[in-house]
Length: 350
Image (cartoon, rainbow, N blue to C red):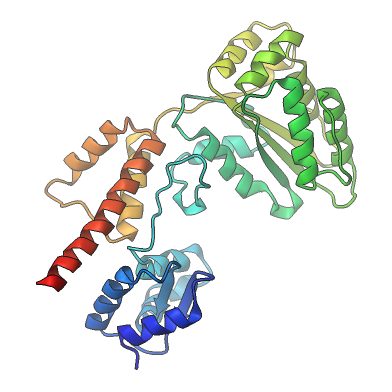
């Protein structure tokens, strides 16, 4: 039998060690689908996602995606068909929790600027605008792609010597260097990076992207010695090491802006060549996409007669800040799940 109760018992047998994709050689009818969706939301013993792909889902994919098999559309369509609403919370607003790649919405031009060798080196902007998420997503896209490396380091509350020591530790821990390396001197660190890019051991690194987040204290302390650490990194970036290239990106708040002002008037020939990027709140199109698309995948829609006014009210309340939109939607989804559970309990009692 393939009714909802037998399926849930099978899910329990499989256990909660992993999220599980179930391929069911059966066509579930609509009433059974609805009962399964309702029961699995109320089953507290299942803490992982159990997504069911039955014959109906497979036939839908064949009819609608057969000409594009192997492309991203198949996966997107499959997820839109089977994603369980009550077990999925796509919105992540806390910077301490990694943002899933599918929830990185907007900032397409900015992320290319961060990733590309000829792009930006300085990223500044206020809090809650997604600077860290931008750098982390660039790291995810670059690192491991054809032996390229990208390493993200949070150097919050570190002066330039402490930041150099932390950076050398992180590069060693993440196997950038062939052997462990430690220093609090940026010149020595720059020399080690140059030597690694020139070497084929253990593997050739064609491109290395180093991203230093929360760099305000680093920049403030660098001013004491004419920004020598930044100059050391900039010099590496200007060179080609037997086909290998290097780029660095530093991100922060107030002192980044101060650095941008001071380097404009600097006599140093390298600093003015570093490209800046100021992160601003989302535009209307990006903000609406972050608000509407994930909710749509969960089956949540705004009523047509109030859609635009409701959406604009939410976005204006959040000031078009990505993290505040994520926070609002996270609470909205949570309230929707709790509301469904309360409603089902009330109906059961009646």
